[in-house]
Image 1 (cartoon, helix red, strand yellow):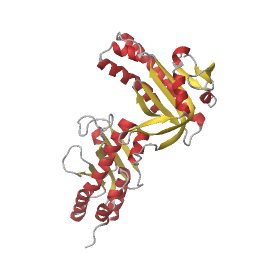
Image 2 (tube, helix red, strand yellow; image 1 turned 90 degrees about the horizontal axis):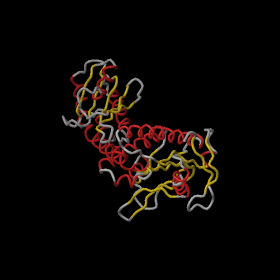
Image 3 (tube, one colour; image 1 turned 180 degrees about the vertical axis):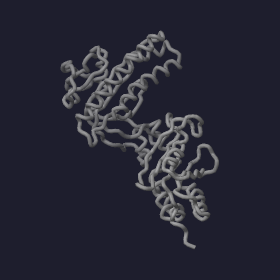
Image 4 (cartoon, rainbow, N blue to C red; image 1 turned 90 degrees about the vertical axis):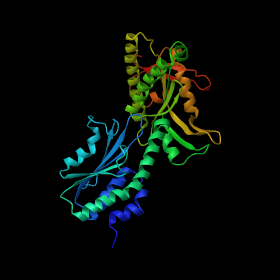
Length: 360
């Protein structure tokens, strides 16, 4: 007896699927090739992430398109409505819904669901059941890969996680990035932490990072590293123009400044001291790569642009400004900035043209 197309693929090829959306689309297409009357499918995997609890991919048979939905509650939680996103999608496709626990009844195991256009025959039902059984192994591989990627991104950031997953695990390997660099840190935080309980210090740091990193991400940037109470972020040039990256970075620091102003008002109402900060922007190239010992590595940023943006941020206190912008960034934007003239930067041979935001 010839093995159905679906089962042969699950046995021989499915474990090489590079992502859950490709797996779901390929599985659904093969089930249709085996004459199953499918309108669509849904695949849910747990996602160990600080914010995301699960990811669900939704496939429409008519178009072959797969979209993704994120769940922000614990898997299987009642009342949130988000735990039924797969079932809701399948129901809207108009067919009866067949739900399958691929790895048994474990609450965080992979789940497959299908919308069927008509009742299944006994043979079709058996094939669908067998497909779920055979899918357990490749889905376990996908789930492990997804878990590892989520954990690495949570602790290393997207760019560094991608390098680790790609096997770049030796010193002196990395990538040169042309980007707008943002460096910021809190002022007088060492002294402040001497008078605060450790829990209050962590709360203050989290509030600061929420606002600066949240603004970076909102405008398309990426946080590379948290350094004590500081943060290094980039707005890569990539396929967009330098002016677009500069405008995004300027918008981000403006949003972060507004967020910190609001936070300081809230802290004042609570009888807490403000959290003054400094942030600097510069456009240039940096090397982002591995340093460390033979068996313990870390990612770091190296290059003249990194040195300049760090030194520029150090001028925030002497110049009485919370945001400073290099001439390289100012030359690429039409945003109205205030010139502070040329300034000497410690350790930098050439003076730097320095600007700041209006109403700073």
